[in-house]
Image 1 (cartoon, rainbow, N blue to C red):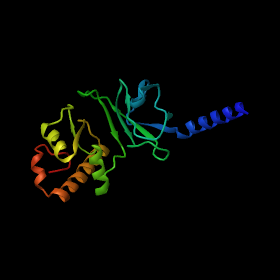
Image 2 (image 1 turned 90 degrees about the vertical axis):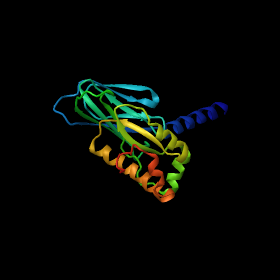
Image 3 (image 1 turned 180 degrees about the horizontal axis):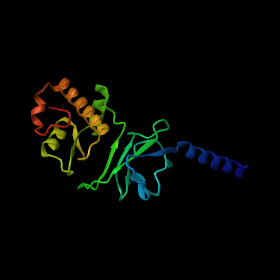
Image 4 (image 1 turned 45 degrees about the horizontal axis):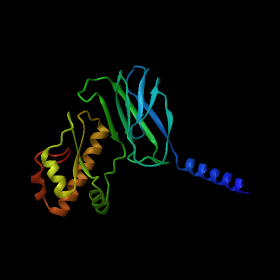
Length: 206
């Protein structure tokens, strides 16, 4: 009887473990005429690397739904990696876009959360501020954060995230929408006085 209970418990634990796993699909968009022969896909949060020898879709298994960061590196291409802010059973596609190789100071690799949420309610924005996860986004050649944004974060709870200087149309749209959403929220809550505190304006804000 004890052995039977142990077996059933183990089976239940195993089934629950597999039930929480998320299967995601990595999709390639090769916008060049070259053939991908080598590259490395990385699940940054899990420190897991996958060698890739052709631009064919493949699946990965993640331990559970949630936020993850991914990257793809190839010596022959500039790689753009797009993915949902949170991976779950419905939003589980990671897109790797391959473009002609160009030399950039940051290595020619650019990752951007494809489903960056830019239609948050005031309540959701307040919650993001409380969590410390709401940021303006700008693009530049280095990762330094201007002092004014450090002080702005302390006063208003809204920080700055700096992305690669390379920007494609989709990223431009998402960045602009994100910054304008925060801009409208601040204007509604504080008026326009706060704007003088940011000499370097985020993308999409004049």
